[in-house]
Length: 251
Image (cartoon, rainbow, N blue to C red; front, side, top):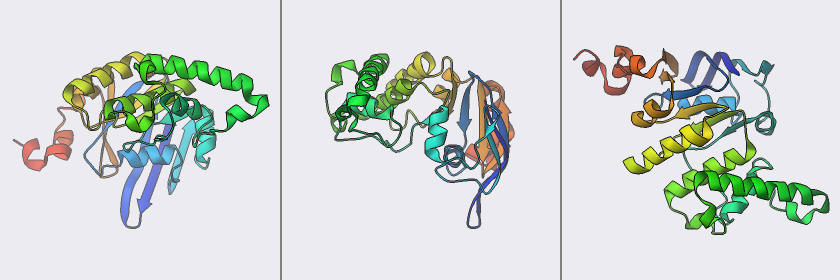
């Protein structure tokens, strides 16, 4: 599905990604973890063309997308959420989901184009369905700015579901949430996002990763240091050291 081959990204003297070679298969749910500054979000940003790699190759379904622009990558069936919410705060909840179906940024003027009336009906139906999936149907007409954080995170998920991409990056989907809210998010990912698509979850909450991911990839200082079953990866000395320091790894 997605293959990165010797991908590198540098910011001046900082090697944010160094020779990253990794593959994500169809219908796989993978946790992408690592300490702060390890390169997780950089990897997502490179794949989704927020900025391009300095070396290496990115393949999606066998097509080289290394030099593609972000809108082309989105149309191929790759979607993402962000650590910092990127929603239309002054738009209604359902308007946010409708706009997402036109890609980012959303075109809010589609209702006024006669040739798009059929699309508008389809988009509304998909938006209603997506909001029902994430439990936001009762707040569909409220402004996004009025929602609490857990519902805003769910709104991001609804925007993805309405577009039905083949591959999804979820960048800290439970960021800022309580343990109970994080458990609810884990169930939502497992039940609604992960089935029938490739889902890559970037998260610091290991309970969520363990709940939804059958595979874990660990980055540290821009390098891939582990890739495998969560129970095996979590106890590797290199992984413990990356998170807790050398003393903990040898304790």
